[in-house]
Image (cartoon, rainbow, N blue to C red; front, side, top):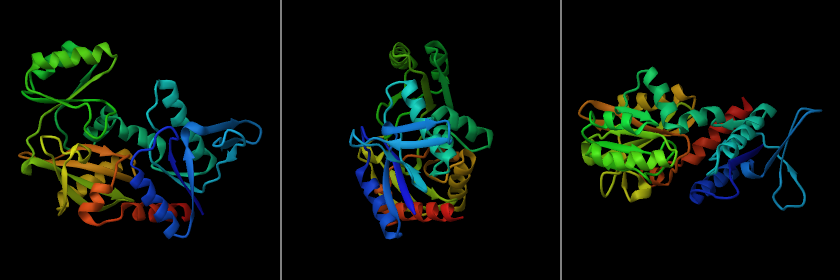
Length: 300
């Protein structure tokens, strides 16, 4: 069986995760291949769907993977580029290549507003959240939050995140975002018990384990210098992580959960996440579980 790793040629995140996946594929006795969405050519008509990629700028090669793991779609520069990459992966699925996570579910989960709407509808506890393009609507909402966190809609690793306690100061951030034609996405700041939060990794409907992440300041992102340690999951945390994946249709995700005075709340459900900190904390090889599940699905 040939198993692909989907990402972009232009930029590659978290090389350690890619190496882990390659090693897991090799250890499982299967062949690995690299699939770059920014190099894909999609042919339609006649015999159906054809897929190729041009790597050496001379001879295109057919994409003939049996199954693949969707790592990321890179950093598209505009909507059309993002749309192409998204639907190119969908074309792979339509041709019969098993993709994990399915790209439309990946899209839903990677958008903070879309995922929160889906999770809220199913009763998953979430922080109080407000999203808009209108800075005055945001100002009004900010006045009801006391202290807030302002995020990017599709941000990652804690970069570009503001913690603001004054609605008038927040208005400067809102003005910057609206001038950049960006929506405003904000959440009520949560006091987390223990000064950090948890990441639970779920693969194939199973919660593999949890890590506790504590930052050097209020952010708990490992990319921002947070320390990690193994954490014990209770039944509520485990069920919340698994249910969040089920709601969003994900087979693999890192679910960030905070324990507050009001109980657990889901902060993010990440279909694209690095597991290096999790592996360091727990000793669990996430990539081995991913490939095992992917192979079982492809055979099944």
